[in-house]
Image 1: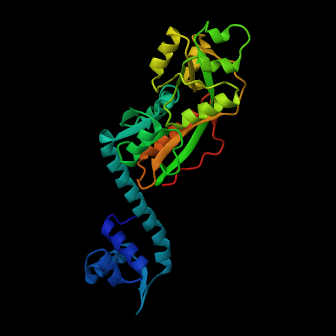
Image 2: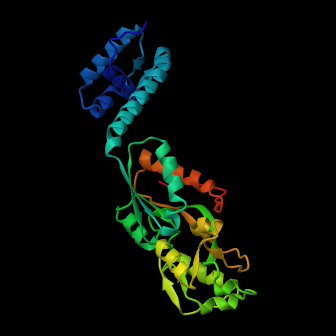
Image 3: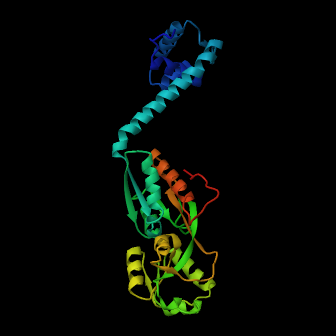
Length: 317
């Protein structure tokens, strides 16, 4: 039967003496005296009724009984540390807060699925959602104002000290209102440039992809553009006029399914917008943040229009 007089300090002294192979060095690390450590070791051996350590002139070695006991002693200390850490995290849960930066293209279609999965874990964590363009969000991440960014891959110079993990990619679409002049008769891609184009700001990666998309599809690019990241504005502006909206398809999938918007029959191209998560490499990852990242991965796989990344690496920490 276990001797209930065995205390944490007994096991701590035993393990430290074994690690250091010296009572003196163990005493220094434990910030106590050699006699105090020796006393705890003797008490432990007396309670177990077995000698655990052989003390030589230059080193301390385990006895056969010590070899048996150390496995359980190490496991018990690990369990205690894990338990203490779990209690600390549980106490902090009510104060936990995650700030998530997200570009508009992901805020409407991907983020709700991510948040639903994250909330299924029943963590008492407050989510703060910050929507902006990709460059501004990366600046906020660098300054510690957000914990993670869901957006496009930044430029190499922007990602210094950061890690980007692609979650998925999706096709770009050119959409108009039902009854738009471009839908009458045979469609001519070159006529697209005759109408106002709604597109993301020029400094964004998505803007460059859209220009490439139009060129490869044989559409002319006019000077009449409105740069916007407001989906609400773009939807309403399209309904009230003859503008053309260049946008990731998932953003307007609901309107396309309900025939509120119509996709122009441009030739299918392999131009896709990438979407992923960016974190700082110099920040330790909390349990809540790791679970949010796992929710991002799971949600991306379930997106019907997205092409999930087939090989999902773990973020470098």
